[in-house]
Image 1 (cartoon, rainbow, N blue to C red):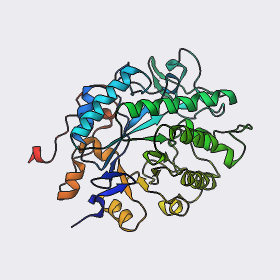
Image 2 (tube, rainbow, N blue to C red; image 1 turned 45 degrees about the horizontal axis):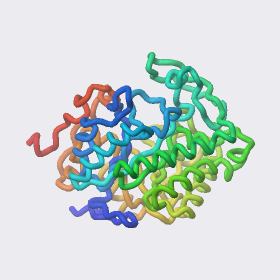
Image 3 (tube, helix red, strand yellow; image 1 turned 180 degrees about the vertical axis):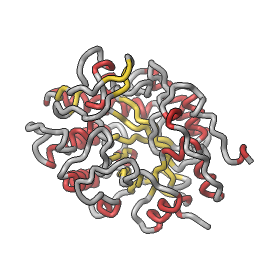
Image 4 (cartoon, one colour; image 1 turned 30 degrees about the vertical axis):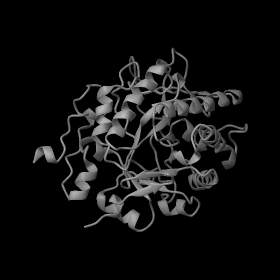
Length: 364
């Protein structure tokens, strides 16, 4: 059977060999210095048959940190480490975007010399805590960014985007999903501001628009993607006016002529149940560019979404952990390897549970 999912796709000026996207996957293999390394290069190279790889979430500054041993893109050493990875992926014929990340309130003072994490407003995450350099700790109430501080954070995004370009990436994706800083500005649950960055649907979008504008001065706008999660509960998110908020954001992003809108539309990892879930169809009505669907897709549901014109590309996350040859398995009807154990997902153990998953050809 011929799958449209496996057909080439032209993402504006970038030719992709298929419509399969490797979703960003935090794997915690960068070490305490957060510098990408040769083991990471091997991991991404193994998965380079994806139409497009979106890197794991990568912090734009020390203030953005909050996950143990995740990579950054704010020093020369980090940039050089990522250049090794992009060179390796390109040598295998792959294409790779860097995902730009600021954790906001999903961080902890243990990552910041005792200073509290920052957010849109001083609203604490309700949850069982966070793993820090000194062990698991309760979530803290973040400090609300002052209005005059926001421009500096926007500048950090632009500087990180410039380093990504220097490191040889094919583009960047702005992480505005999953309860991290941009999502904290977007959603009324976490944005209680009354300045130019809060108080209305339009103003809650301003931080995202400022970031996209700044990054699009470094990259052509069509090499800039944005990821959103309108249905998600991760990091204690979910706002009553989510439909209006995210439709407005998508409409504004459409006017900015970005490369694609990456929508976490699936409910496999939780739904806030504040109304009907938003679907790709909702976003097709307001965003005219390429749309990437994500979360819980199988080959069958992905193919259906592409065939029906709901998505142009489909991102796969967890299946890529234990199936480095995911595209080849789809193309040949080969079974997928069992899902990797969660103990391997974030374990800083080098190759184990990271680059040691065999391809189908090596097991037959």
